[in-house]
Length: 65
Length: 209
Image (tube, each protein chain N blue to C red):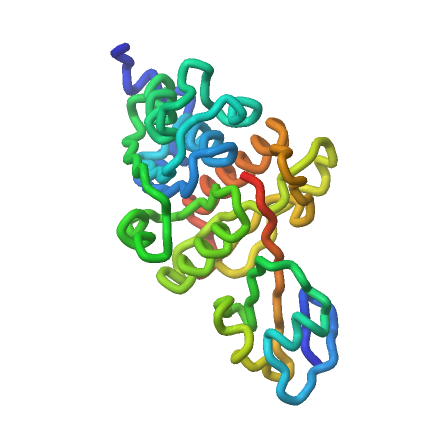
């Protein structure tokens, strides 16, 4: 089990940031992703594994300023 | 140049808080709706030094929400903003950078700041800045904004904290193509960022960095 934005989500073997984003249907193009407080760069979403028990935060960024 | 009396100028400031702000250097990435409002509030608060970067010029369509004036159309935003800040206070040192901020020049432009404030328009730029900053300076705060479009709905505006990354806004209001954000909500979010910045500069008893 992992936490995604404070919600419980079932952990899966081989889970990456990319597969989690797809599973959660987070389709926004610009995101900030942190695993256990550490930022994951956009270029590393495909290759960064999510460990079981991880706390993941996903925030989407919206234009305007 | 109008001469002011330093002691009198700061007589209305809180003497216990002011030294923390006078000694601070704050970076503002972007001098549009967010950045122009942020700079004015931080200047009034007595921040010692501002570093403001923006490559753009003032256009007529900016005046619906950005702190510029009719006679400043076509000026570089950083030049116009500097002029406006100097009309408020001569006590904030202002360094202006008329360049586009990128991952490659971020350290050169903003490496000396205590806190960086993200005040860009495009989500892609926001993402680049947040990501690059957190990789370069994981221990220095960055205060970003996301979700400022529309009118009303005051209670949806909030601050989310992810370690040293702070995000102000409603987190959800999308901009429609061709439609600008509206002055009050832009200014509110800008001032949430400025307000948080002033708070973060104060000592926080019991909280580790």
